[in-house]
Length: 136
Image (cartoon, rainbow, N blue to C red; front, side, top):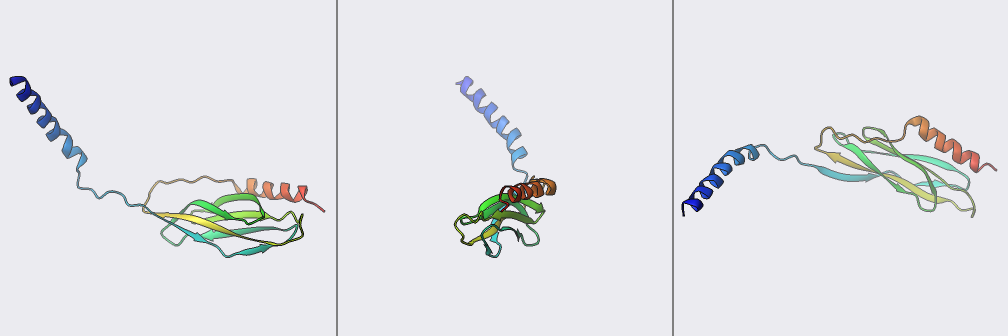
């Protein structure tokens, strides 16, 4: 019986020592995620188009969305803390135009979140490569 009393006392003592460390009274961090879409844009045969979508003030871009229909994705990248950009191209193989749009996923209530994306030089190289490949 003394053994159980000793174990019970140790458990209570540990709880008294540990619980205050986890209940600091601080409010847990809140994270709010939302998405926004940019306007639709028609991309004609053989054409390349870039589009941007921007988060409202107080939010940061954490991901992008390509709504590219039958167009080919060239790149999708964060270009500023609140802006996402895509480039899409229509190879013109069927002679039709297709709609595309960009979307951005935004977060509020976070700190020290870093999102990396292709540099401007890398994005321009992708566009240049597509144009070279689809010259008429």
